[in-house]
Image (cartoon, rainbow, N blue to C red; front, side, top):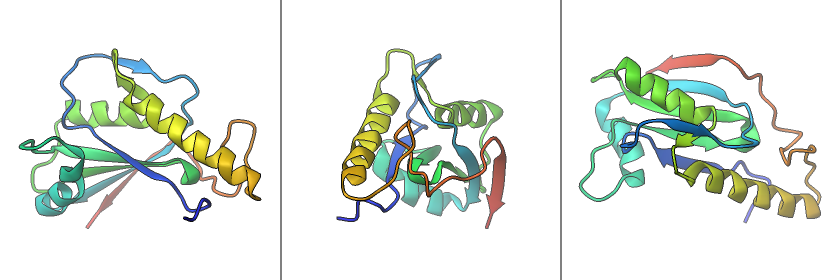
Length: 144
């Protein structure tokens, strides 16, 4: 198992049914990259993160090692402003009120980087990989 490889963690945002958000303490700032792909590609990418019989509207993939959050949308059925804002909030570390999914994802990543640090990896004081920093603070839109 390659501990130095980026950890790709995903959470489906289309299944969000609760209103409101709460910030996960210690969430790192991630660059947000929006991908607008065919509806088929988005569903194939995101369906594995929703429950049986559910249809995703979009999903987010967190790559903490690269300080990046990729949002996947259907170009065939563009997301509403509400879905865009909601998903961007997830990339910024906001979970649903009462939820702990994002906190668990971050804890798993930090545990894995601490373990990697014991075997030669180098982390900063927040547990982030020093060799995988991207410029953050902007949203990048990519279309295919």
